[in-house]
Image (tube, rainbow, N blue to C red; front, top):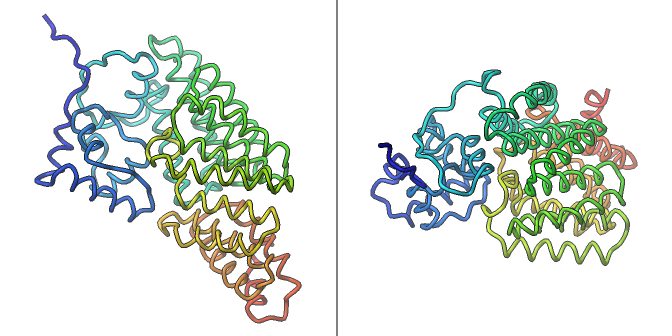
Amino acid sequence: MAAPPERSRRNTAFRELRGTRSPGEFAAAVRRAAREIGEQVSCDARYVGRVESGEIRCPNYAYERVFLHMFPGRTLADLGFEPREAVRGRRARSSGGAPPCTPVRPAPVRTAEFPEAAVAEAVRRIRLHDDRHGADDLYARAGRTLHTARALLPEAALRPGAGAGLHSAAGELAVSVGWLAHDSGRYADARSHYAEALATARLADDPALEAHVFSNTAFLARDTGRPHAAARPARPGRRPAAGLGSDRLRSLLAAREAAGGALLGDRVASREALAAARELFARGAADEGPEWMSFYGETELTGLEAQCWAALGEHPRAVECARGAVLLQDPHFVRNTALFTAELADNLAAAGRPDEAAAAAGRALTLLDAVRSARVRAMLDGTADRLRRWSGTAEVDVFLARMRPVSA
């Protein structure tokens, strides 16, 4: 007679990697590795114990990056973890006991397996690539992946147990493609993808996905100069966020509200929302939120603060925050380094510091050799327009001369 299913199986591979170090010592090594690549994880001995006991069957994206950095050449399967799509599918289907699991190396993506094995993996790869290189080159390929996922959804949904987990994975893929559209300047496409993701989130009853859509929709509205639309989506995002128990998620939504208020010129509302974002951020833990929130750390919040102060016309404060975001950003993530540097340049120009602005803009322009982001290019175009009043100054003229071939 077969043995009853276990609730979890110990992760012996991960335990072997810890070696003779205590759980606390190993947790400290994880935190150090996270800092090396610009991630923020609140790893402690308890987390290590949960991994080794099998309670955590697959880490979130932030921990994944850290573990793969610590153990180069290994996959998550080599570290004793299960494929993300398998874990996510079980969680969506049932909160009861899961069958015993043997770590396996993820198989190559095949059309017949695409539905859940492969959609979550596609999202992971998009996010990893976007962090390092920007959206322009990735958008078309990701769009084709989304098209394939849409075509397979009706048939795949008929499989036993597919349901909500499959739709959640497809919704996250739509959000990821929407973000690539946003970052590459395809704003109408981005709105369409976010609308699709929101409908999918409600179909799957997935509050984490729903909150993700509201956050991204508010950000898109801010970037496209629609202040009322920027302020609105973050508020309904509070409802799904409330049930997720994540102060970091609530912090991000408050920061989105602050941006909308700043665009509207509502200084009081924006300041209050920024204060709430900071308070909630300090209260929360880096790894408590949904997986998609791995980007939201001290660097991102500081950059969002800079954007709010700039919209409110408080350019010296915006310069201070933008400079802090540049210093906090790990250079490994080139797109974000270029973004925060471009924001610093624009704030310096608005503050009447043309030489410093041109120098910062030049550094951002150099980073565009390695990253493709229409959003960053558009920011530099705006900075160039600001700086033309100071043409005749050596530093400014050098930057403007470099911008001509890019803008042509």
